[in-house]
Length: 68
Image 1 (cartoon, one colour):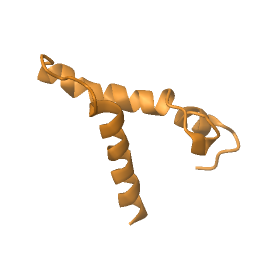
Image 2 (spheres, helix red, strand yellow):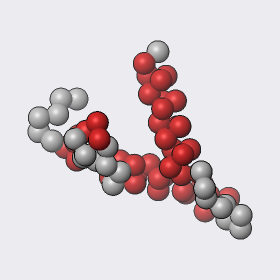
Image 3 (cartoon, one colour):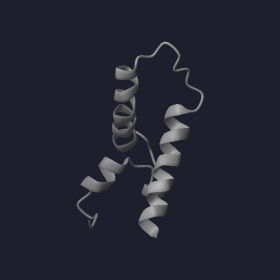
C-alpha cells in the first residue's frame, strides 16, 4: 500500500510541477512526449526537497551515509 501512495504522490507532483499553468497549444506530440522525461530529470537533479535537508534526490542518494 505504501508503494501505491508514493507513486500517486509522485504523479501528483509531476502534474502540479509540469502540467499546471502550462500552455501546451502548438506543441507537437513528439515535443510533449519528451517533456515528462525532462521534468523527471529536473525533479531528481535540481528540485530541492525540505525532507532531504534541502538537497536534491540525486545528491541525497549519493551521500555516503545514505542507506539504500
